[in-house]
Length: 249
View 1: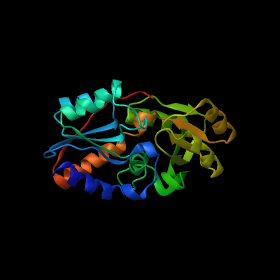
View 2 (view 1 turned 135 degrees about the vertical axis):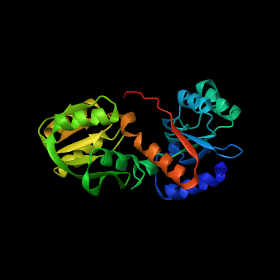
View 3 (view 1 turned 90 degrees about the horizontal axis):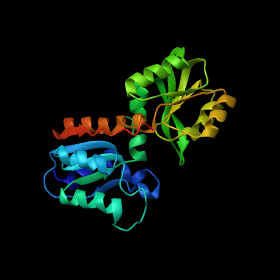
């Protein structure tokens, strides 16, 4: 398949046209290339390091969660020029999916995290931009510290716990979605899991009597690109490789 055929399939798979997002997300095909796609590099972030890894691994295309246009309209110079020019010289295409990847019910970041912790009785949770992008559900009761330790081991990241107690009901939204802790408190959930947050979220969690767990923005958003990669391998026999470049944030 060429990149246009593959992008058209992914647009439909991820429902790109129907899901609202930040304007600079520019979901879908971001950089076109030529020729057949034989290998896809999967990454959370499009940065010079992951571009270099994709080229080193002989990828013809990258599929990422955070694309190249987050800075908005900008001149082609400096590090932005270096990224674009290195991709063009290597004939490396780029497809990005932000919110559409977060909320996909089967292949999304939130579904991957829910499956990782064994969350059951799943229901949509976590309103953002008028849609619920995460999940809530239940697990076998365990302490907040035990849940955090299990998360750290499975994600390979450091985990911060705010609050304590027994956990049975959980809401989760991957990435930088700490504001949604208020919704978790209002719904009476025992805990809320996300990637990262700010100082004031500490007080919101304590006062809202909801354990808040920060498991890393990067770490909580590796699941979606990996799941899409597995899907494409099974569907089209295209090779994929995860390009791990953790930020520890």
